[in-house]
Image 1 (cartoon, rainbow, N blue to C red):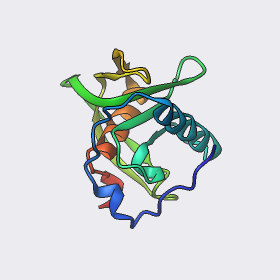
Image 2 (spheres, helix red, strand yellow; image 1 turned 60 degrees about the horizontal axis):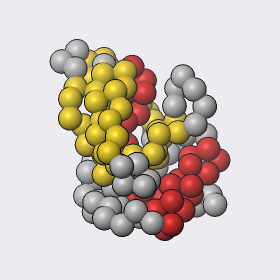
Image 3 (tube, rainbow, N blue to C red; image 1 turned 90 degrees about the vertical axis):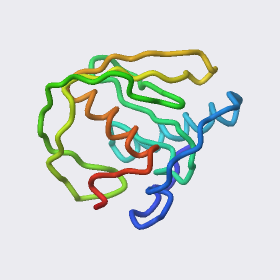
Image 4 (spheres, rainbow, N blue to C red; image 1 turned 180 degrees about the horizontal axis):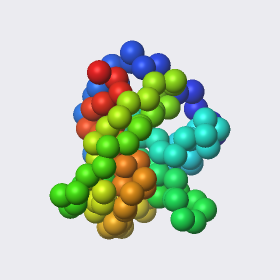
Length: 145
């Protein structure tokens, strides 16, 4: 079910999110709600705090195939030394765009919706999205400064 996006001045967007410890139907519903919300607003990624939940869950639209990555308790464990400066927007800051420097590739580790370990290697635009959404669960949004 689609949720309303939290306004850009809400303090939850600056909150470091709690790690998920229960992998249950509530988590599954949160991930589905996030996917529906992201698709409704035509985004390419979304973090749980953007819909008012201070938990470490992100979703990222797959760039080469249909579907989304859902990552619980995501962390960047590796990033390339090479970076690219590119435009970045955010559903929480509609109409705002900023040039942001991001690594060209990253490796993200976390859990899937059932609690299993996952590792995702992302490059280019997909890496940028992962980095942006992980920033959100860490209480950081470069566009909100």
